[in-house]
Structure formats: structure tokens, C-alpha cells
Image 1 (cartoon, rainbow, N blue to C red):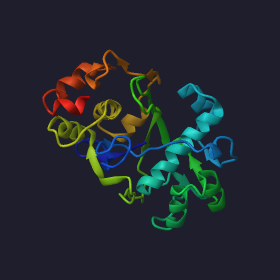
Image 2 (cartoon, rainbow, N blue to C red; image 1 turned 135 degrees about the vertical axis):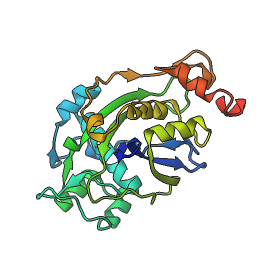
Image 3 (cartoon, rainbow, N blue to C red; image 1 turned 90 degrees about the vertical axis):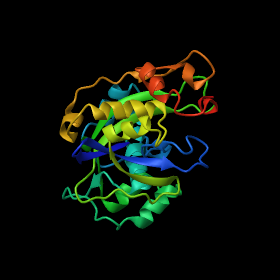
Amino acid sequence: MLLVRDGTDGVEVFLQRRVKTMAFAGGMTVFPGGGVDERDAEADIAWSGPDAQWWARTFGSTEPVAQSLVCAAVRETFEECGVLIATDVDGRFPEPGTLADERARLVDKSLSLAGFLTARGLTLRADLLAPLSHWIAPVIEKRRYDTRFFIAALPAGQQADAETSEVSVAGWLSAREALRRWADRQHFLLPPTWSQLRELARHDTVAELMAAPREITTVMPEATTAMMTGLRFPFSDEYFVELDGRLPSDALR
């Protein structure tokens, strides 16, 4: 999930630095995210906005998978940074800090998002999300992920935090500044993260970003060699030009 807000240097996005002990992307700068929960796939959920059928067409999936993807985006954003994209019957977002118990139970999987929303009388706000892209890890990767990227504007009155064991530091940066820091070796971005930041950096405001028409096509980098530098994806030449000489060669293996 790319959680965004307006800033003086264009669109700002909430970024996290994963702890180095994580099995995947340890030490990398990433967006909040995670896996789907099969319990949400066909659950009866109060829902506002484009339905599962629309998301299925957009992301090229079945309706149950589409519903679980949207639920995962909302759930992981809440788990990892405390921002909940759901409202009560009056259209109000929950007061910050009132859902700590549910957040912990979502993290330990003892509660599903569907169960949480139903118990609290909350409606999932799919109308506040926008699809961004679809990436599949290349065949050379030992861990292969099939990832849909979403965008959501930070709801009024909510604050993103770093209260998760999965990250060492988190905060807001403009997409342009995040790319400048990548070029200055201040953090490391995997190709999908770098590519999403490039898209955000094209826009001056969140409204412009959310309204931009886009067709979701699947990106699966082609592996021409067994090394990272052998990957080919949209604008990969620019990515590797920026990467060249900035990290020791063994970091690219």
C-alpha cells in the first residue's frame, strides 16, 4: 500500500525500513504490505466503492481473490502503521488509538479483517483506494511474490506510526526525495519500489495522482542472467545506471 499525502515537494509517501533480520528484503526501504487472508476472500463485508467484480477486472483475478487483495491492503496498512481505511455508519474514521487490541489480534491472526469490521460496525472504504500496478517476482527468485500495489490518501485525523516489529524506522518522504536518497546511497530500493516511486514523483498532488487513468498490466522482470543486474523491466536501464558503483558487487548477486 502506498499511503500518500500532499507535501511541498509533490506527493509524499509513507516508507518503512525493514529490519535486517527479515527473511525477505531485510534492510530494504519498502511500503506497508503483506499477504492475503483466505478468511476474507468470500466474507460478507460492509463495503463502499468499487466492488470485487471491478477489482477482479482491474487486476485480472477472480472475485474472491480480488476481495482478499483489497482486504489485505486495508488490513496490512492498519497492522503496520495504524491507519485504518474504514468508517462507521456516519462516515467517520475511528478515533486514533482506540483499536489497539484489534490491531494486535489482526497481527497474530486470531482475528480476520472481516470479523473485525463486522464486530465494530465498520465499512471498508474501497472508494478511497486506487490500483497502481501488478508485479510478479522473476523466476530466478527463491521467494516469488505476486503483488498488487494500491494507493490511498491518508485519512483526515489519522497518523501513521512505526509500531511494528518488522521495521527499524518509518516516516514520510516525498517520492522525489526518496528517489534522491536512493541515488545518494542513503537507502536501497528493490525494482518494484523504485518503479512505484517514479510514478508518484510524476505528480504534484494526491488528487492528481488518484485521478490519473492507468491500465494495470502485469510486470514480471525477465532474467537474462542469474544476477540482479541481469533483470529487465520497464526503465531497468535507468535503475541500474543509478545503482552502478553505489554498492559492492556482491550486493547484486
